[in-house]
Length: 143
Ligand SMILES: [Zn+2]
Image 1 (cartoon, rainbow, N blue to C red):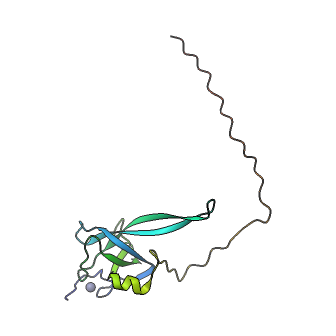
Image 2: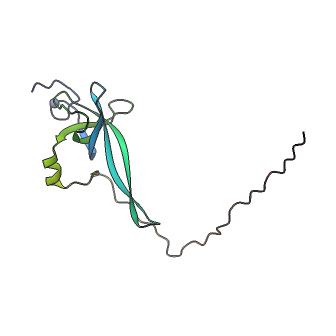
Image 3: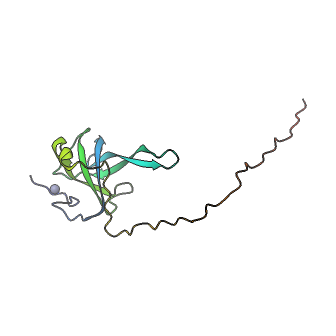
């Protein structure tokens, strides 16, 4: 297919770096941009369980990739293409691919990033759990 999109990660000049995310297209109304919903889980320490969260990411859709609402896509982080677009669709993921890879909903690859240091103090801080005293405002409205 003839692809003349200069912002195509494959045929154009757009370089991708940073995160690669797997998501589902939830909007294809824009001409060269799709909205991708990525689901991920966040651990809730209090209950030792995971909470499902999602984010909507706008991604540039190159001419050579035809995706519609409901399609799974792989998007890669790139330079900001507009105020809200800093991802580009790199491929359409079929159900077979997704099964094969068994990928997590969100794959974040940050080669340059260093792992966060866990700074855990050995002694738990004993903070007084006193609610700030809010005295009811003495308002006596006499009419
Ligand atoms: Zn292309």
